[in-house]
Image 1 (tube, helix red, strand yellow):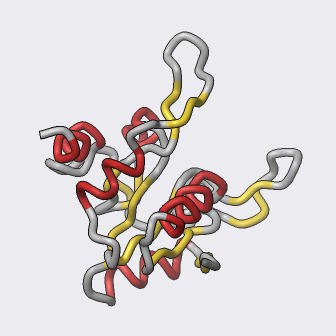
Image 2: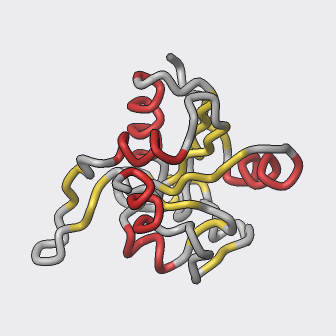
Amino acid sequence: MDIKSISPQEACDLLTREEGYVYLDVRSTPEFSEGHPQGALNIPLHHAQPETGQMTPNPDFLTVVRANFSADAKLLLGCFSGGRSMMAAEMLGRAGYRNLLNVRCGFGGARDATGRVVEPGWASLGLPVERESRPGASYEPLLKKARP
């Protein structure tokens, strides 16, 4: 399945103008807590290890997504710069999800090999950002749905 990538502005437009789209932020929980697109839900593709800061795969990612979204859910997948969200979209596509869009620049913007921003992300475009999680939007309550 080919995954289409859209800009943060296009994602914001879909969220405000179209019915049923959900922004699924696949960044780690600390990243999500520092700020995220307004209305986003957080299911991390990877967890940051507290001792080292190294990212390790979240073994529950697919299980938690399945517990919270049907295969026909309209999911906008975003991360910091677009890489993790594309990996998540490909994984979900292989698992049978059909309505997936990757937010190509994510929250922080697409970067070149030197780390320079080459396309601005959600935050730098001035799109709506939350720093507090709404009830049910952070990872823990979404994980609980997978482990009743």
